[in-house]
Length: 234
Image (cartoon, rainbow, N blue to C red):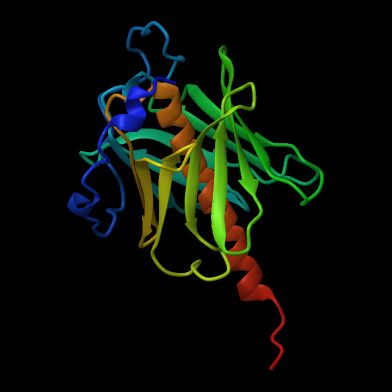
């Protein structure tokens, strides 16, 4: 990833506003049929001209134990749809992202058999693994690492601990690996996440930050369910 991205000033996060989500969203004109761009994995072309996206969970009877999301552009138009699948004896985390034409764009897969580690592969069909996301255990902060396919750390995501900030609004900073530069932000408010990054950031890194937002939401959701269902000591 070029060092230039780390030198760009962060977006104006104060300009981000959130409103109550509508029952449905207009579909973006991007349908997945645009010409391929050299060096850009298929399906990710629509991220080229983006510096902000949002993710909104939607509820359907057919989803069962799984979860569904819409990914929206800055105009509130749907770019992608995502579905998390939950099945007995299946992967610990399995989420697929599709474009408006229903074509697979990206998959997040965590096939671990125990809870002692978290390592999610981010896969683009016909392209392969574009990166990995890992959760670094820390009691005081939430710390995720975004890595390239060679497991070299490229970006860090840092935010409040799950122990203290899981039910209210939450903000995570996307930082350079030396923690000296903020290159993006993930803000969770009212069941919606707003993700910002530099316009000229490498498109695979934009996709990795989007994937990290999905994974963060899953971790927070699991923690909320645990807190809500654990026996009271009172």
